[in-house]
Amino acid sequence: MSSPKPTHNLPLVMAALDNPHRMRILAALRSSSNYVSQLARDLEISRPLLIMHLKKLEEAGLVSSGLEVSADGKAMRVYQLEDFDIRLTPDEVARAAAKLPKD
Amino acid sequence: MSSPKPTHNLPLVMAALDNPHRMRILAALRSSSNYVSQLARDLEISRPLLIMHLKKLEEAGLVSSGLEVSADGKAMRVYQLEDFDIRLTPDEVARAAAKLPKD
DNA sequence: GTTATGTGTAATAAATATATTACATGTGTA
DNA sequence: TACACATGTAATATATTTATTACACATAAC
Image (cartoon, helix red, strand yellow):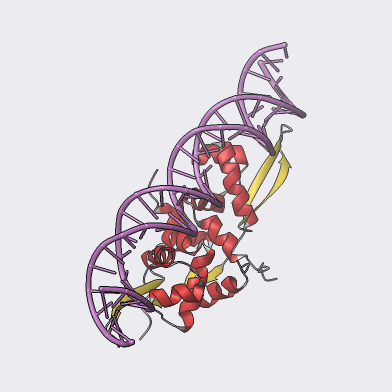
């Protein structure tokens, strides 16, 4: 079966990718879907900051998350990469622009 | 001959597209390459603001510009759309992330 | 009980991006 | 000369985004 092609919201995707931390987060999530505290250590950024960035990535549909319970009983929020494939062309941008709020 | 595929700088492109005005500017430039003052009237934004946005689009390689002399002798800066086609995938993002300055 | 781990959020500070206003120049025409 | 229309920039104000700090709560292990 083909991967479902969720119709991405271009403005949200652009906003999400317009940041070096968030690009690195996506890169890190390719190999391992990790829980937040571990990711924060790997990327060497604070957990509240990481959470803020993950939220934007999730709102854009580029990652998803869920709660898991670890072996020792702790609730952990685990993020995983969505396998997106988005094409940027003048027409695609124009299509998105047409959907923008009038003013 | 095939269209030259300029290797776009992903961070610059993302920054450029992360703005509703700039998306509308690209949409407008599809049909007509216009000069700045005309574009400003069409899009109903101030000329200095438009210039700022066009600068970002040009730095990202999404538009280009040149000076032309109109029939009545005025110098006009005319912008035209670059025919970009950029693919956004986790791997492409990771590739760009790897090139980011260390810190 | 204290320590170490995880979760989550709120308040604030700092840095960037966006937008406006004002002014400068030059050309052609009435 | 004054007007209309083009270019360009600098200074400033406003808004948004990013980042930090300080909390709160829960579970397991010592």
